[in-house]
Image (cartoon, rainbow, N blue to C red):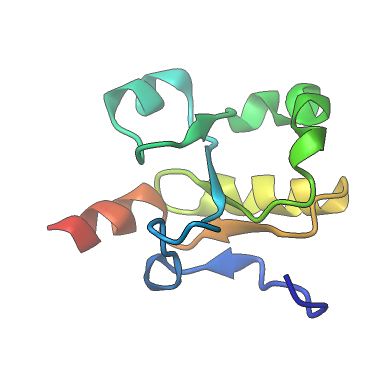
Amino acid sequence: MNDAPLPLEITQEQLDLHDPNAPLLIDCRCVEEYEEQHIPGAMLVPLQHMSVRIDELRHLQDRHIVIYCRVGNRSWTAAAYMRATGFPNCQSLAGGIDVWNGALE
């Protein structure tokens, strides 16, 4: 990562999951949504559990992390929270999994 702060949001077009340095994906939706469908390789950390699980994520704090939800509202909140708690390279996927799915069609 360079010294310039990353924008809080990243678009699906900017995300290359085939890159060896691809970001870690975190799905911040609820368990049922995740089980129904998720981006392969994504870790589930529901938004409502983020504050109690933040310490278990601490070892990832220097990694590039992209959080997503259904449309981008919860992930924006989660990314802002993670940045405020010491994860400077955390971003929200603009449009969430809905945009991701649209790109696959």
